[in-house]
Every structure is written in structure tokens, then in C-alpha cells.
Length: 390
Image (cartoon, rainbow, N blue to C red; front, side, top):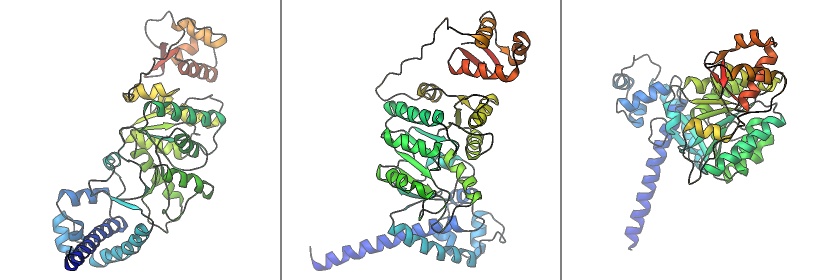
């Protein structure tokens, strides 16, 4: 190869890198513009406008192309300011190998792209497949119990045996989130942590080592916020939609009636995604949210990996899932025995009010016992809080 040709190849590479860098800057800038949202990003794609045109054409041309009012707030000063900030952020992403995913591009996670309030820009550190055929968000309270922690480990371990490509998504918080990430790592599964701040920091700081392990093992850390963005209460609420949006299924392991996990579950339910919850004792505050989701029919009851496989219709990769067996004549005592004796002679499900009247058992004890029987697969709950023998 002649020196001239060699120099030309170097020049072409530089031009190509400059063009790629310019496009990434436009992606970043679009997410930084005040007033931009998923609706605008989708309109840019639908109208065939390139990001370069959006940022370089005059306001009237941009407004006409997008069918917007000229007072929409996308003036030259606003766009130039966003570009200036984006150039600084581009230096950070380039230096730390952070990928920039834009809603206007084909490589944007398709499940996340389906939700109406998808983030315009997503920053990603790591190599996880955000379009994995099998994905589940596992969330819960920071005040986890051994019951919830053990379930996280068992669920990820069991599912990982059938689906080695399963991607576990959570929020890297203390408690159930950290347990879900750790269980995924121990099962050899990729896991994705969704942050409520820029990728130049890790919060909580105690999970820095866990974050490094996630990235190193083929997972990823993602955020919609540029570097320099510090954790805020509003950001934690906003990131819940990404946790719910990235997965086909959201599993709530433990939660009080209020909290981030309940927010994530309700968002997933609103996105028409599947939601499952681990039932617990009615006296346990850490299970109150899960029991509420099940009672309000916003979540399916989960007790084992087989419940996930059955609900999602996933085909295990080269393995057979043995059907769960239950005793046709279970040995029950106390309230459980009373309920079972009533239900086994009924041809149709009975409402909880009728059971209360016929058993004379207090409502709290009745609900607790019904939950335990359902958990054991002895009875089935139908719409309207009606029960029958499984």
C-alpha cells in the first residue's frame, strides 16, 4: 500500500468517526432539550426528519416539518444550548465507553420503546442484550426479610437453569433489588441495573462493587440522566418506568403498601405487561403490598419458577419442566380444613363473603388461610375473590 493510500485510509477513518460522533451528539442533545419527550421523538421519525435537520434548520422549517406551533420552544438558542451540553457529555461517554441509545434509532430497546413515556435518550455502560427473548424485572422493598431474599435466590437459580439468556432487571437499591442482581450473577444470568442519576457515580455507594460485577459479567448499568445528575426523589420515581418498561414481566417479591416497588408494579400493569407478586402473611408489613396487588387482581400469585413459565408461555431451552404435583387429599388442620371441607362439595367458586358467613372465621384469619391454601396449590382464586378447589 502506498503512503498516499495509507494516508487516505486514515483520513477516511477520521471523517467516519467525526460523522459518528456528530450523530451521537445529536442523540444526546435531543434528550437534553427542554420540552422533548417520546411523542416528539416519534414524530421526528414519522415525519422523516433527521436529527441533524432538527438541530440545524431554522425554527419555521422545523415547526412546519413536525406540524408544531412556531412557539413550541425549539428556537435556535435552545437547540444550540442543548448541543453545547451534548458535546461535553459526548466526551464523557467516549472516555468511559458509554453507549448512547436514542428513541429515534433502530437499536433502541424495543420493549422500552413500546411504552408511551419512554426516555428519549438512554445511557448504557456494559454489554447486556436489552432485547433478550426472556426478561424479568425483580423488585421489592429495601427492608427485605429472609423470606424475600431466599425467594430471589431460588427464583433466579431455577429460572436460570431453563433460560440462560434470561435478563434480570432491577434498581440496585438495598434489599430486594440488590438480592435480585446478586442472585442473577450467582446463576450466571445477565442483569441490568437502572439508575436514578448519571453514570459517573453509583448510589448507594455500598453497591459500587456490585455494579462493577454486573458490568464485568456481561450485564449493564443504564440511566436516562447525563453525567453530573445526582439522585433526586423525582428521579427514582421516573426510573421506575424504565424498570417496568425493559421487561416482559415484573415480579414484586416484598413490598409495603407504598413504595417504589408498588410504583413499578402499577406502571407495568398500566403498560399491559405481566405482573406477579409473592404472597405473604397478612400480618407482615413487607408483604402487604404484594397481597394487595394479588387481591386487586393487578398481579398473579407466584410461588416458584414454574408459575413464571406457565404464565409467560416460555419454552425452556432443551429442558422439560415437571408439572407441580399436589396431594389430592391434603392433610389440613384448623381453619384450612374447614375451608377445604366446604369448597370440595361446591360445583362453582364461592365468594369470600360467603365463606366468612359459613365458617364464622374472622376476615383477617380467613384471608391469611386462603392465601396459604392458594400458595400451596390446593385452591384457586377466581375474579371477584371467589375460591374453588384446584
